[in-house]
Length: 455
Ligand code: BES
Ligand code: MN
Ligand code: MN
Image (spheres, rainbow, N blue to C red):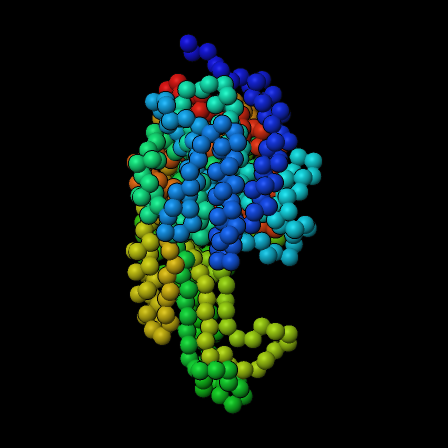
C-alpha cells in the first residue's frame, strides 16, 4: 500500500528520456518575449498564455486562461478527482533584456552543453517547466493527488492585478498547499528554501524649480538646482557608503534574526568569495558572510535606482536644469508595513525639502514563511531525494508579490521549492538555466507530489 511509485532510478530515467522534449518546450517559451513592463508586448503576453495552455493539453493535462483586469493567469491541472490538491506557482513574464552584454540575442534560446541561455530561462520559465515535467512523471505513475499550476504574467511588475484575479477565480483555485518555484539556492549543490521574503516599495522623488534649461553663468549661484537638491535630500535619507537608512524610525519594526537563524546562515555553505564570483561584484560593503546575509535577508534597505535630469550627452553643457527625478525603493522585512514606512518618508521629505513631490509605486508585502510541519518536511525530503543534499532554511532578499496574496485570498500556506542558482543571473545579461537543475527539479517535484499524496 505504501510502496513508492516513483524511485530515484525511475525518475532519473524519466528525466533523461524527456531531455530533448524539455529543451524544445523551454525554447518555445523563452522565445516569446513576454515582457510585462513593456506595453508594446501585449501580443506576446497573450501568445505566452496560449502556449502555456497548449503545453498542458499536449501532456495529458487541462488548462484555462483566467482573466484579470490586467494580464491573464494560466490555471493548469492534471486531475481534479483526488482528495488532496497542491498548486505550484510560477510566473511566465520576464524582465526586459536591453543589456549590451548579451552575447547572443536574448530571446533566442541557445544550448551550450548543459546550459540553456535566454531571457526568462531561469526567472522563471525553466523552473516552471521543471515542475511541470515533475507533474507529468507523477501523473503517468498514477500518484493520487491533484497537481495544479498557477502561472502569472505580471510578477515582474509587482503583480498589480493578481489579487483581483485571484479573488474573482478563487473557487476554482482552492488548494491544500501552494509551492512557489521562483527562488535561488545559496550556490550550486546547496539547496535552500526561504522562510521569508522581503517586501518592496518603490517611489520617485521629483522637483521642478524652473520652466526650461538656463545658462549657469547667467543665473547660476542664485537659481535653485533641482538635481543638487534631490541629491542632497537623498544623502540625508540614506548613507551611500554604509547603506544605513537615516529616516527616523525606519528600523523600529525590524525583528533581528534569531540566534538559531544566524547559526543556520553561518553553516549554510554561503561564502563571501562565491557570492562575489556568482554576481561578479567588484567591491562589497563587508567581507563578513553572516553580515552579508543579514543585510540581504534580514534587514530593510533603501536603494537609489536612477537619477534623471540635466544633460547626459558627451562633454558638459553648462546649464541649470529645470527639473529632476530620483527613483528609489525600499526592501521591507516581515513586521514592517509599507504605509508606516511611507508615512515616515513623507514626513522626513516634507521637513527637509517641502517642494519635493513623492510619487508612490505599487507595493509588495514582506512574507514570513513556515519551517515546520509536514509540508515543510516534504520540501526537505524532495531536495534530499533529488539532489542528495540537505536543504537549509534561509530567507530571500527578493520579493514575489503573489505569495502573501495567495495565503490571504486562498487561505493555504505557501512553501518554496526553488531551482535557480545565483550564477544563473536573475535579471542579468546572459541569463541561463541548466540541465542539472532541470532534471533534478523534475525528480524533486515528482517526489514532493508523491510524499504529499501519502500525508
Ligand atoms: N524571482 C524573483 C524574486 C526573487 C529574487 C527571489 C531574488 C529570490 C531572490 C522575482 O521574479 C523578482 O524578480 N521580483 C522582483 C519584483 C519587482 C520587479 C516588483 C524583485 O524582487 O525585485
Ligand atoms: Mn521570478
Ligand atoms: Mn524576476
